[in-house]
Image 1 (cartoon, rainbow over the protein chains, first blue to last red):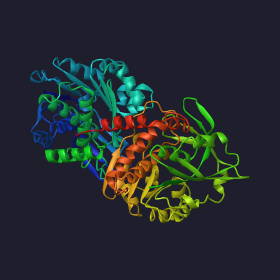
Image 2: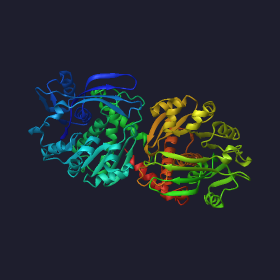
Image 3: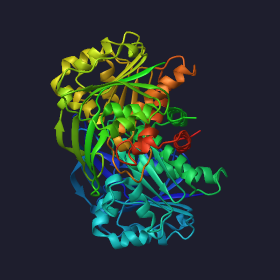
Image 4: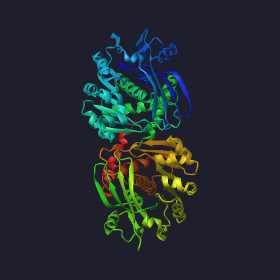
Length: 310
Length: 310
């Protein structure tokens, strides 16, 4: 049950409210997603960087033994995507200081031949037409989940609606669900989004958790109640990585027959929640690089106990 | 394990974003709390109204067989507290249109002699000095929980700090916890509040659920994912009513030995969550008046299943 992620690799500079900062760290949806998913099993990565991409970041990715980065295109003469942002006081809002699209403004990467049999697909945030092109290269896809953002809802709505007709799941933020549907109530917004085709919609609410709106049911999960949040960058992508990694692992292990079923997705959200809670403890992939399976399991068990009500 | 609530009874006029309104309906923290708690067992109510308090509202309270309203003082020549408010689009924010304190500006009600042996005490929102006076009349109190609001944090902080040294639990809203402590992170704010004396703090986040910060642990619960919210008035008070009603019932039934223990409070929060989810389905106490134990149990079971992760 091979898992693939298509998206961005970036070089980030992050400022946090307490005055900390990190310049030039490894970031991007693909990097975060893959690092998270790799704690559950193998994950294939498709993205493009420029020839300025530091060896140090390449080494960081290579140190995740479950990440197959052979789909990382390095383009000579191009520059890597760069993003810089500053978090505001409550950590749930941020200000983008600069965005240099660089290689993202060029043609998207191709899915390598040896990745084309991938069965679990995560289309990390990018132009929905690009996401659609990626998906067209993956003929064996069994479970396809896409992320999106306000930019595409505003500027490429037709493409996004088309994409929604081709995916099983959609992941997006709270305010984006409202922007797309005009509905303030999260459950109502999710139900409206299902009408475009997906089997389920996951609405991410940051520190307030996530809501799953599935054709077969509704579930709400809180975030893990973290006290020390250093850098929330990548929380959403690692949430998705934990979710998809869990689904691919359980399906590969024969533990689930329908990876898109309500109860399976619900549990997958909890795994995403736990992985994301580690991500935000430090900058970049620092915590995920050092993360041991025992730590994930211990926190998952704690989370399960916290919500055990029978 | 007799449960008592002290607070306000009011006459509310509520406007909702979809253009609905109800004028002159029964409201107030005491009314909502008692209606919710009554679904778990007997509850004593202490509040004052004027001689304009309609028989219709008296009948509504009397129809809750578990509410002992003999602590409701009717003051001749006084007028009942009136509040009018309008909910904004997302239902989690409201605008107060008018507040007529009326009887609330007079001396607070007294706790009747036959209520003074109450063991479970909920001090619904009012001036912390008044809450302290109420508590002083309840010598047998075993578990005392207080609610508060931004007004007292701003205007009566010393009294509020004193009160916190005398209660076991504090219930307050998300933004109020931040206002009191200056801490944006809910867990950090809760921990800071514990330093004033309580054993636990419950931070209410409306549609985003609640966080329990207890000396012995932390728990987060989502709200019940409701799609049709008609009127959120009273959600917080009925949350507290379900919570305290559950604690009093379980202690009375010998099912718990320490009603202030972490795991017990955590489950109590879930009961509060479920009761509150019914409250917001209609205006005033309409849904709680018609609520059957089977409906509460069914929704609690659904909620438990939604979060079952083992």
